[in-house]
Image 1 (cartoon, rainbow, N blue to C red):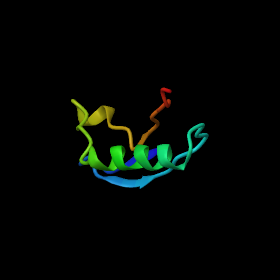
Image 2: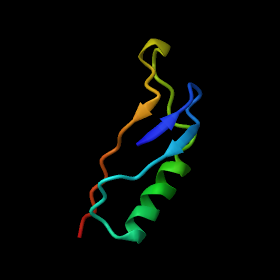
Image 3: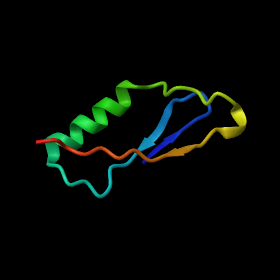
Image 4: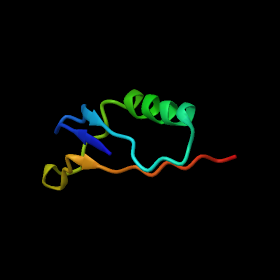
Length: 59
């Protein structure tokens, strides 16, 4: 779960219900943080502070 501000900057990042190992969790966190600032909503009225991403490891 990612909490963002209206400019797309990450306020908090929480990894929950992860089926991957610690390396996978770290990779997810790094990938999300490197995407900062997140893309802006096309219209400010549809902005969502909380985003949920579903990453699945492929083996």
